[in-house]
Image 1 (cartoon, rainbow, N blue to C red):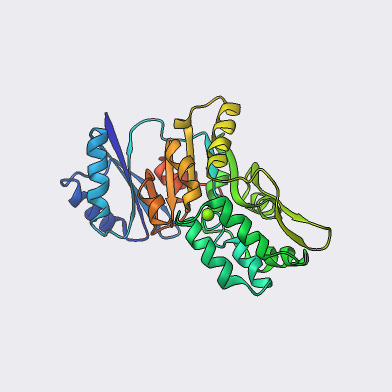
Image 2: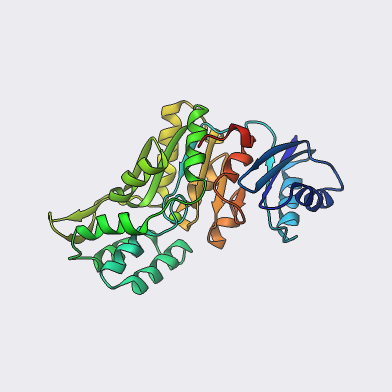
Length: 294
Ligand SMILES: [Mg+2]
């Protein structure tokens, strides 16, 4: 088999080429994927086995090059389904932590969020605990949190628009809440969304979550259901996220990407975005900058 190595960085193209080529035995890039807003991407093709890919990934990871470098198997580069986490992936915030701020409980709630995303707490237990702490919070806090706090991460809309323009299905799947997933899906351009439901009494949150809770396994189930509906295999899917509850879908997909992720996620993903933005996920699929939409 052969390997495809894609390096994306906010640096001069010649410097990126030299930094990476040095680690690849001096081999020159096969093609340039172009540049956009100061980001530059280069692609190499090399012979190699899956074992060699794993060794190369470890080697490059240890070199501290300020670039996002994916070491992938050649073939089937462009995926036909994008399934992405929302909080701290497509948006820069954790919705539950922002809501908690309106209840004066941000420190308490975000401490639990952090531990859950690291995989130190059971996701469902941590979710019900945090939502329980918001009992009595007026529904206007949801509108205010969305309007004042929530922002798309750089590259989110371009990633979604470009994949859609190339025939891919795009799905936002979140352990967060449909109040937010519906709005964020619209803002970023996703065709579908799934999330948990915050229960309210018409005026305020009751502190309860609708059942069944969408957790780690439900994200994998969503991947399989959307893939089946599209008539494609897991290998045709790109899955992306930052937290422990994203790990099952990330590992199952053909291209699982850890986005500014917790260590437990970054260690098991196929590639990571740490230095650049969500557009790196397009370069990893072999898209050229000139093909980007939006
Ligand atoms: Mg997340």
